[in-house]
Length: 247
Image (cartoon, rainbow, N blue to C red):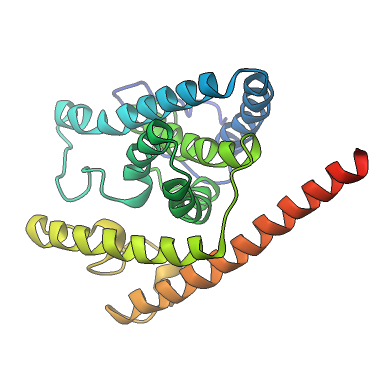
């Protein structure tokens, strides 16, 4: 972390910059935490694991919800930006249901959203502020932990993906987008970037204008989900083959 680049919890004078010492430390430190966490949890009964993951997802959801009162307190709350309707912001609540209901189907549906969306958000962060400003803490807790919570059932519980999960995730995302579209109409917002392309420089700049870019994104979503499904199955099959050889 660069000298002097630390904010207080409620005051910020330093902006976050990707691919700096802070970025590398946060991501690398979390990877080591994940390795330790998985090893520590493996020895516990599965029901204990589920309860721990459930409470972790509740805590991550509370971190996300805390943005509203904290932004109201600091006077920067914006109804068009701060309600948890962007994908990474509402996924913690879905994970609460996954671990409460033990639903592989719901897990498989959001698996693609998390790996393709939240992982990208950790590699190319959109947070404006350096640590330890409250919204920076929220950003990293939400985006890092939903990745851990999503990959854990695949690694430890051996939950598997099916080809129909790719199509299920596509249909579900369109259903969610339709609901959020009406919220956008009421609020004058652009959650999920349904109404127009984001103003900041991003890959969206390469896409055609609204609404054509939505169709482009959906095509990319299907293509990358199929690629992710193939990679997942390849890793799973190699892991099973290795176990057979060892036995």
